[in-house]
Image (cartoon, rainbow over all chains, first blue to last red; front, side):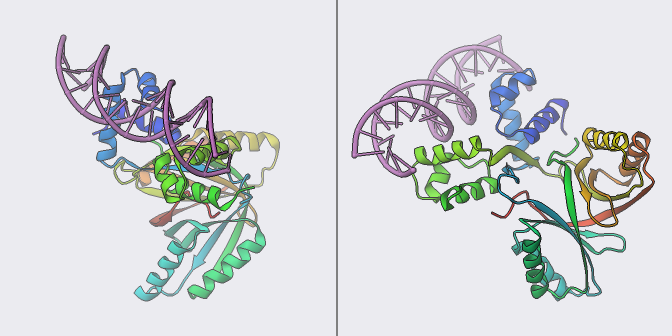
Length: 150
Length: 150
DNA sequence: AATGAAACGAATTGCTA
DNA sequence: TAGCAATTCGTTTCATT
């Protein structure tokens, strides 16, 4: 499926997608043409989903990550539909998961400050009835990478 | 600081960094040179941290997100140093936060399956003494974006 | 499958307004 | 700061091994 050369390419690209084909070719000891073909194939076969720019949070004054833990007793389709589309539409929600265990949903929300979180929270509960919500603020981001282990 | 044109550029790039300068210039109603210069400036001023490729998790058979909640009684420098470098070095840890509230640390870990998680867990606790660890598995990833709200 | 060179298109720079 | 034109550089294709 994926040989070690393909994996090496994916690892380089998930660390730095601004590398040129020539750069990548050089580090994996290939010339540009076969390297380029491999990258094309990886894209065509769907291994590479997209390329994105990661912005500097400090520079943008977007200081806080808030984790939101939601327990619900509502499990009907209408509520779920309503909840999911609220998550989709709210740009502060960067990640949302349906969980096993005692918490039903876990969100990671990014906001400028606590009052921005308060506004977000009010906005969310106005869109969807939520019974049991608890929030926990991140004091420090120790690690953040989009690179998955392959 | 950032005018609305710069923000529009950042928003385009954090959605899709494979857009050409010409594409971006067109959507924000500019010609390529001033658009290119703005992008350069945003990079030089540190607004754009990096460009990365996001890989397809399904295709790579990396199914599960596990959230790990850690409470600790150890707060000395040596332990923290040991813990942080373990997080840094373990590729399964994609995100790690020091939290407010009753949980001290929250990790997002990505693994292939439950047995891979078990192996990761054993590996982690062999590197760092951890007293109170609880894990919760994601059943569904409802939303994931790297785009911050600006 | 990989190479090297040629053709093409996009990125970068300098000049003008 | 924006626009235009020229140049440079990376990407894509193709003939060859």
